[in-house]
Length: 284
Image 1 (tube, rainbow, N blue to C red):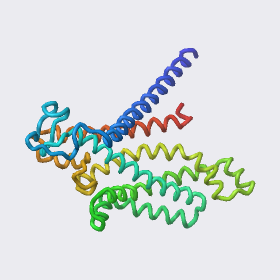
Image 2 (tube, rainbow, N blue to C red):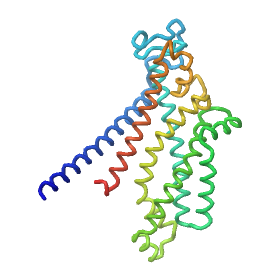
Image 3 (cartoon, one colour):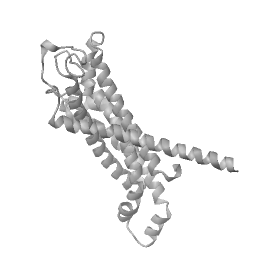
Image 4 (cartoon, rainbow, N blue to C red):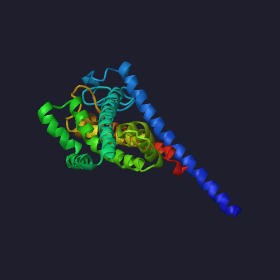
């Protein structure tokens, strides 16, 4: 019995440590990206759009820390400025899509019936159009740019959050505290705001952290196709697109933004997993 108890204690301690490591690693990566994005607003080693043709395709450390691109622009400065563009688009899109989707999901859980059915069918229709295709359709009418990228990602996020919030809210409506609130005559709106939303907020936050990684990846794809922020503002996706011609001559032009995108997605995924474990008491 002592051996079993000791083994259980060791496994539990190992799990707690691994959970803390994921949360710490994710928070550190995301915090670093946010700090770089904010720093790029006031300082970069060189102006990101400044061209110096005589220094084009310089390798890392030969001119600047990370070298230059085909126009002689400083790669480090472009990565820093691209960090702000990617994060600002991703956070804005997830905030808009998450808010609309969460409100719709909570409302559907409160009313049920035809509104819930219509919401699920609308979600199915939106899911049938990937964000890349949605951005291409919007781009045909609105032109490429920040607004098109944000709108395309936000529209895709609405059904994602609506379904997650609806499932969580339906579980909350079956809890004893909600039944007690209904018994004393509280309206569905009051119950949704005072009892349901606070108890599912943790799940919404965790899902938002995970979706931010997907939003950054989607924004990079849109920029790669020329549907993101308009030039000369640098983005990680456009840096990847521009580097295709120079893969053999200057591979760092593709490697550096690719690694940055991967690091950002990894950071938000780790943050989401860490927050999920932190908020879920059954995992402690």
